Length: 67
Image 1 (cartoon, rainbow, N blue to C red):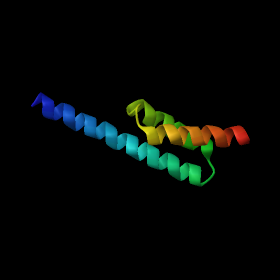
Image 2 (cartoon, one colour):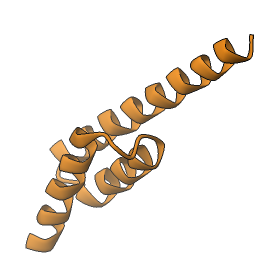
Image 3 (cartoon, rainbow, N blue to C red):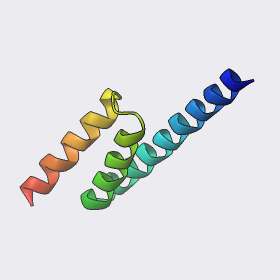
């Protein structure tokens, strides 16, 4: 029972990270890189080893640096 609960929690965390990443992508597409970065950083806290989130953070930082 406990293993199933842990697996369900892990899946929920992953789903939250995907949602945050998707929100970040939408913000970035609108040119709102500050809010996008906030979403990506929150997502990274949930799944720190996700390469796509790391890449999105890098893109935002570069865009903000260009401003």
